[in-house]
Image 1 (cartoon, rainbow, N blue to C red):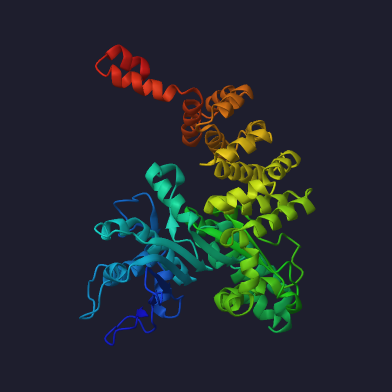
Image 2: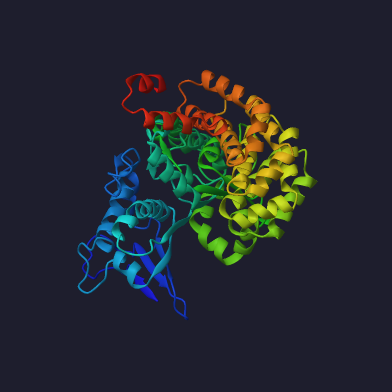
Length: 520
């Protein structure tokens, strides 16, 4: 019912409406929802913003997230709108600030959305809202829940994980759990600015493809003199020139769809969707290696699919997409049983097992009831079986441990069920097999921590399975890893109870130099 974002009559910069805000109010009263959307690149001004890719400390969160930099051009665009619509600078007379609207309409949830450039702006704006809303609405009873869903968005955030504080890591982790970026696997835009190797591979692919296709429509002397040297220069310099931006990263989950190796328009309507973490998406190789791409059809889908992605899905395929992404958006016994059935039917495929476990993990993380459904439907022994069969799959072990961590959290029944099914020794075995993977160690130890929480039987089982000895050995081998040391210390404290005893000793003898020195 409320709409904002119309261009001012005297706006001398924008020629197209840059953003819009809608507020949806239930007919029978109660809390409202707000939708804030940003459009993609249309004007010359937009392309100027896109080209200003230097990472800067954001004006939107420089105090709270000083180590999380942002694309300069996009940050400036968001700051301009933020300063106007949220802080109230240069607003037309009588128009309320967005922060005032949140309180006036009792907004319960805010969804940020956008496509391409708009997706980058939406991600920046939503992270700013996540950080700033508690301050702006400090006197209100309710701070709205912030979520993000963008299409084909590039990477706006620039940071080094090793330099992030614990608070910054927590903020980004929480933000990532409520943010999604839907992308096409051949689209280069979600790969910029940070994935320089993938970009270089795509450029090289187009260069080779051009040699085969262009001669039919362009004279050979033009190809030889102009096109070939130009494409060669771009391909050769891409990796080195783009390496500067390799610390640009995604934070949202990536919903990646592809057209099942489509080679013609007849196969265009068949596609599948998979969910990837930002790290796993970054590790995905360019879909075609040398000599693999005999058809120009799929690579050429990149630009059209990027431009038309939201409309294609909204008009034609969103019901199918919703089913494909059921583990992220739909709960219930039916979805759990569907995933477990797929696991039973394709036990030998590590990719199929990992895919199903990853989706079960998403369900367990977002919905406590789904965690109960997974346990009641026999999901625990199935996941353990997959861990045994595919013990060499690092990603599968990681997602399996993550799933057990979520299932065991705040559920005594699941703690007992996982231990009874042999989950504790299997998790410890995963740690032994993948000792060099910090992600497996982190999620395995988090799972063991949740299994041991307020459960003495499970603590004993972990100790009897060699858990303490293993933790100490791994901490010794990873002395310089902050993540390993942090989670290792927590595990030892939880299992032995020494953490509370040490704290009690320091408090009782805070003036004793001998006690304090021995403790530290």
